[in-house]
Image (cartoon, rainbow, N blue to C red):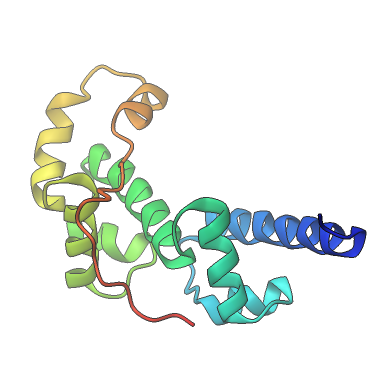
Length: 149
């Protein structure tokens, strides 16, 4: 049985977590780290990481990288940017990290995806192409994430 102040605090935490998630969705291309996100939510980095994972099933870092990869997929489908240009356009500072994460989430390296996606989504409206090509995190491939807290 929880007390009223505990329930109020929990609702406040959930509202802050939604704001953090919305900020990641909006500012995915900006340099974001858990400390900055936590400061903006008036939480410690450790508390934010634990609560975010409990609420959304993945760490803030994983969520950020998934958003970046989703946007990269859209840019690669357009076909007018190189993989390196896409990497930096979505906020990644390392081509190696970007390529590794992209391959983990999508199943093929970005260069292969760029070639295949142009053919596979030809003639589809962009809203449909986005939905059918959305990455699904491979939960079986447990990847060591950088310690953020």
